Length: 255
Ligand code: ADP
Image 1 (tube, protein in one colour):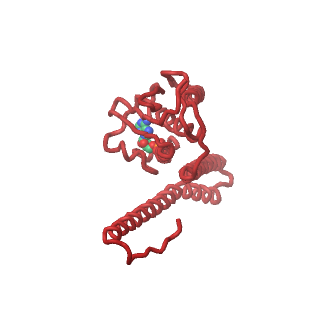
Image 2 (cartoon, helix red, strand yellow; image 1 turned 90 degrees about the vertical axis):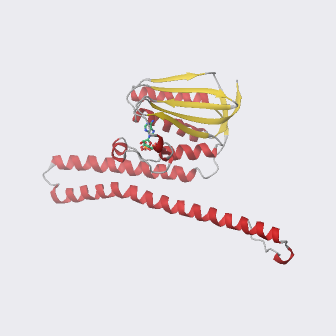
Image 3 (tube, protein in one colour; image 1 turned 45 degrees about the vertical axis):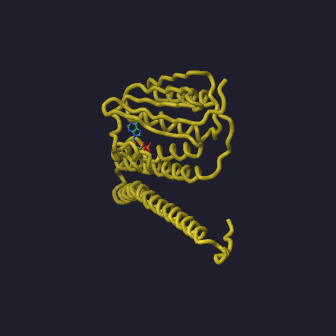
């Protein structure tokens, strides 16, 4: 928007007061966003520092003691490779978060079809019990197919990562909304953590999450995409019983 010169003299006190309010709100909004960006950059750098220093120390180790030490060479190469994978994943996820802000191509997407396909892929890839239940054969939403698939992927992937038993995926419709649920029987998420897990880089158990390839960005990405789609993503969980993540999106039509 272009800045317009405001003719202050011909305005009433009320109008001026209102303008001042709007201006202050704008400044607060910009400040808030700027601070969030700063936090993101600082968290991202912090997350990248660990794999970089691991790679660095292994390469120095190789340089000093690599010759005639095949076991060390093997160990170092494996570690470097896995840290490179981690950095790649982090960068991809950070880009994905940045991209969500751009307008994605929207189309009509059948969420029953998409979620059934994604569930089947997981079932074969992990050889784990992943059940799928649908209330109807087709539920269409307006959205970006790749991004919606990403949400489904993140939720099922987490359910499998953080539990050992079967995972249930369920899709139905309620009040003109598509309701997509992923339930696990894992150890659960304490009440006080249930909001924080959607924050960028937040992990309940950093070490454990790192072992399973976790970055703490998955749910932040899922939440950002959901918001872009005017939907809602939430969790209910009971310690020792498991967690259920629920995605709600405006329904376009059902067949
Ligand atoms: P990560 O890459 O660490 O999995 P996410 O943003 O996807 O990052 O999740 C953030 C944190 O929330 C995880 O580190 C984990 O502690 C917790 N979490 C996510 N999904 C589940 C789940 N199904 N059961 C238990 N904890 C979960």
